[in-house]
Amino acid sequence: MSLLPIHVLGSPILREETTVVTEVTDEMRTLIDDMYETMYAASGIGLAAPQVGRSERIAVVDVEGQKFALINPEIVERDGKERAEEACLSIPEIYGHVERAKRVVVQAIDRDGKPYEIEARGLLARCFQHEIDHLHGRLFIDYLSYLKRRGAMNEWEELKAQYPGNIRHLIPGQHETDADHPEAEM
Ligand SMILES: [Zn+2]
Image 1 (cartoon, rainbow, N blue to C red):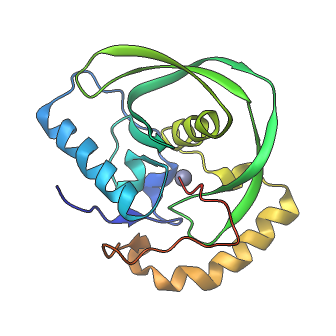
Image 2 (tube, rainbow, N blue to C red):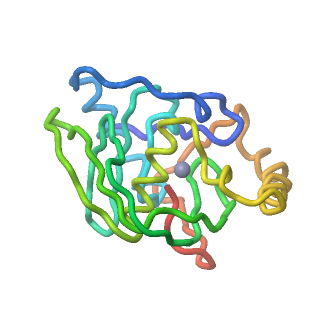
């Protein structure tokens, strides 16, 4: 397995629509394994293919041990509303409160090519929504108010210098989460 470089805000692929997967190949299974490894190295709870520069409709999630490979995921039901803070592995050190559905039902295909359906609430439901957004070129900052987004972008102007070419290279064992914020980078 290998750690993949993470594309950060400014990389065009984060804004592109992904391509539906028609067959789960060994190459995709390797991508999924590498995405898990990269997500864990970054202390994240979710990671979508565009975040590692890939255009397949694939994401991985691990919320408190609830682990899912999501291929071609779709939200088929959503209920309720809940606001909570989010952070994105592709926009490090930027945080914002986002309103999401409280409960979702997601249909997807797993690593073995088998279809499944999962009902989720709370953080898992939030993570699914954040990752599925990534697969359609949407980022959590898109939901912030004009003023909040402008503030976040001003902060990012200074932070982005750390990521030449809009690429974030992870160093194993060196990522620490910010104690002031919940551990919900995805
Ligand atoms: Zn994200």
